[in-house]
Image (cartoon, rainbow, N blue to C red):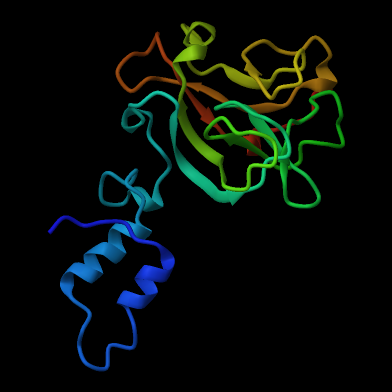
Length: 194
């Protein structure tokens, strides 16, 4: 029988105290496919960083994700979002140096007040809509775009250096070293320009 992902409640019901030996091998396989994300393609992937060659579907990403997050703003896939003091995500203001302490990327398009959003905190995404901006720029820094307020990224250094927030790099596609539609999002790179 094919393994299937189950809800937390269903898994807990399957894995009861087992005093009568009712947990089957199929129950354990269902548990494994529920807790291990499908993005872990190879042995050891759980412990390593996401690799661009395994991100092959547009508008997807692999890496450290936070689930069941609340969006304050309406966002599109790949928009940078910032965590506010109440634990909700919103559009960051790249011109405000007191903001943008914790950054993430929206993994879908969400309406304001969405409570089941997925936010990528670190990893690789594929986004064909920005491929023109990324072409021939592998290895370039990605900045939070200070000319918009929607959480877009750019490879252009902001005209006001104090607004520079490095959020990652342009990643190779896995096959080509010139053309790409993938970025490595790493908000730990976020710095204040001087």
